[in-house]
Image (cartoon, rainbow, N blue to C red; front, side, top):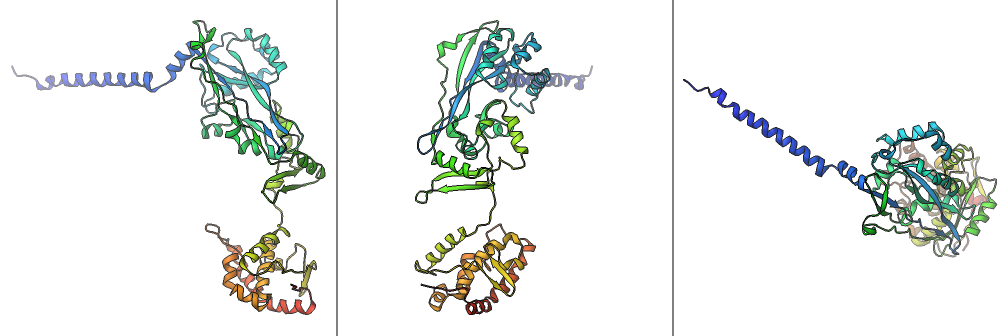
Length: 454
């Protein structure tokens, strides 16, 4: 009787299949018990409650040690969804002064992992934020009726003066992008959004602490785990002392009341900003508490745009302030001396074109968006070169010397910032204008519009 070798190979096939199945089970077991933290969280949540201790945010003083921004106690309500058994929604809504629609939407958004990536039914989730002491006291009395809900003590910002809203800034709840950028934040945390609060966020926020509480089989708190051996105390944020003078800031805001504009006062010897005023402004205390979103929406819809910081975001013509930097450049290059002076007659007329104050004859060649800039480049740069006497002309050597300082035809070009085709048409026009400057010089000398004295 011949042996069937095809049947003989079946044992290898069956053995290989068994080995593959065992490997699949081992890999899955490794993934569940070692790689994944879901079961660990579930087990820990049954025995422990990790309660975050939030640090006090650093306070802010002005240059004279006057308190500008400080902390005030507030309370958050958190919830562990797995612990909710029976919930009287009407009683909860009446106690917290919220609507049933808001309650349903809050639970729905909380479970949406797109909006709340760190959601877990076994961990604390923020339900309401920034409750006052009065509202929290009412809820505290009925807390036993709502299993799964907890009270978390926090601090919110308060402002001593109704001034400096733009420079001090404010804080708000973190967004999804904030949490993606920094792992320090979790849903419900606050972060500086504007001004000093944003610039010095890492110094002001401090470090969180943690308190580990032990539970029994029914979920009741039994006290600190191992008498708090593994607890971590929070570290308060650092205090800030600004160069701002709050009295000068208040004066500036009073001077600009009912007007649109900005004031910036700087100490020349140190560069310290003494005041930074933007008008119209708003009361910084409106951006605190549960009504922050509503007040922010009102300010955003205001046609006067009080949220716009015109001191650093507004665009204004440079005016005579440009002459200071221009004069310093000429002094450094040896083009003028400290005794050189030029009279100002408010402008001049050339072939029917009037140049008064911020108006420029270049407006006939260029658009108004860059005419003010070109005016100062040519009238304070190229004109000086073409009209200066021989001893100063020898110092400047040639037009290439000015082009090295100001760029080609008075327009400075940086790498990666080339002008468009429309702006390239300015160059030949500017070149023709500079070629006509000797005739303009003769005309102005004849009418004595420009004089040079020592």
